[in-house]
Picture 1: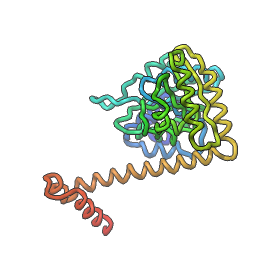
Picture 2: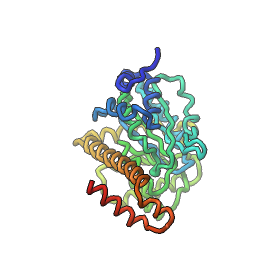
Picture 3: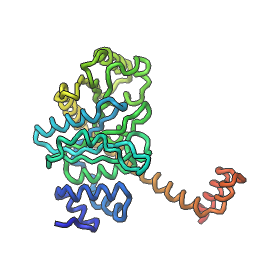
Picture 4: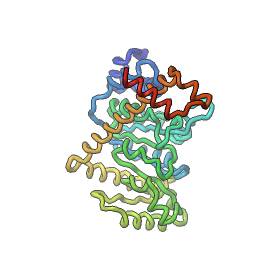
Amino acid sequence: MPLPTDPASLAAAVAAGDRRALARAISIVEDHRPGAPEIVAAVYSGAVHGHRVGITGAPGAGKSTLTDRLIAVVRRSGEEVAVLAIDPSSPFSGGAVLGDRVRMQDHVDDPGVFVRSMASRGHLGGLSAAAPKALAVLDAAGFPWLVVETVGVGQDEVEIAGAADTTVVVLNPGWGDGIQAAKAGILEIGDVFVVNKSDRTGADDTVNDLHTMLTMGPQRPWTPPIVKTVAATGEGVDELVDALGRHRAHLAEGGRIEAHRRERRRADLVGALAAELERRARALVAEAAETAAVDDGTLDPWTAAARIAARTSDG
């Protein structure tokens, strides 16, 4: 049966569970093709079907293998899961370097699993600029679990905390020292910490460092658990899923989850408005008389911007 081409019908097919329609809709949204705004508007209801789990950490920490094992455990419970894997961008095509998706090939024939790679395209924060829209489309498909695996991140790239309900920070034995851990921005966003490759020397020291950092930090309504895993063998992944379930139950108490999602929707609005204003700014610069003077260095960008903005506000 051919896929529908109009946005409303495509969105309806996504909601009905059509995986081909889901893949097509995400491609349209990611590439900003004609119909993308209409698709997002059609699937977006504000209702949330799935619990979003963000998997973040440094490159090489084993996030993809851990995600693969996490899928297997969730599927044993009979629940469906969607994965949005944010990959580095190809410097030539701008597309995703499909390293993460390759590691999840064991689930390619499972109709209860949907894995999509998305290029970061230079966007900082470990995500992609199109990720919030893609997550809205995935949520409309009704998956009870949505897993977002970030590009390998550093200390300040913590955008995943705003996009996820539960943020999992993956570390390896020997990661930094106590002072470095206390400074690291990603450790301030973790709801669950995973010390992966814990069969290596130094795993217990890393766990102790994390415990010390959490004890020294501010009081939180939720104390993040620390789970030791060996993703290559699946060791500890059941314990990780249990920790995710406990955090989900914690969020359900006292309206915490809805408060968090209200903040996320507000952040999505700010991001969408910023993107629209940037688009308009580029259009104004392309048409402004001052642009040529800035190009040849006879006018500074700040004076030029002030003149363009003044004309825009007058108009």
